[in-house]
Length: 301
Image (cartoon, one colour):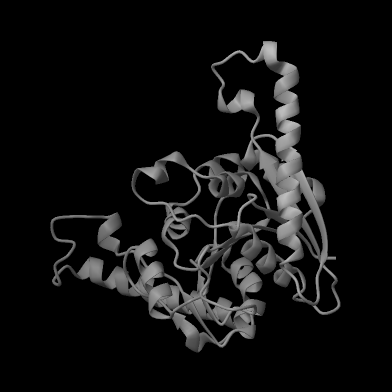
């Protein structure tokens, strides 16, 4: 059974997120699928950490119990309006705790195959504050689908898929996860952005055409990148004719490609292995989540 953990807030946006998660859970006809709807309520003592709530311990517990019951009722109501025909098995749960760690721990306990959450694009100084999505990504081992609040599609399958890869060992994992969605779409593109060598080894002459060393090495890197990505794409059962290897800043090129192709899903991998790697979640993935115009699927190694 495909088990999907859906982490949502008790608001109108949760309907769209749950409906998308339900369709993902029912992608395989022979698989009934199960949605585990989770809402996390932060403890009052955590929100107001500097205050002493000891004299009001009983009232604090009562308030939280009331809040959890109300949140669950709202989600149950939203859930009933999500599915008109086929529906996966659904369980609604409201837990008290810190959102990111509670979601990640619950996904591990349930042995969920996928986590689905809302995508809240953030800009400016708000990106420095982090988000629940980032927190979950740094703590979980599951793939994560971040659902955009303003969808470009009517229903699954996704119609225009953009697959973002690099030449690391994770390329095969990312393409294997992306292949079923890409093949079910009307169109797809595999993009691997090549950073200019001058941005890594800058020098006074790096940008000049007569600098033979830079030019030759850059050409070699481009050829090797194209060959590696095309080979991995073929192995995943996708067409190498859909491979595009631009040069530039990864985040900028990926977001521009998403706009140019009117993508309704971006699939990207992450090298976030281990506690340190997950703590330093790649800036490219962060940038995509902050500014993506559509849903984003993050594939873990």
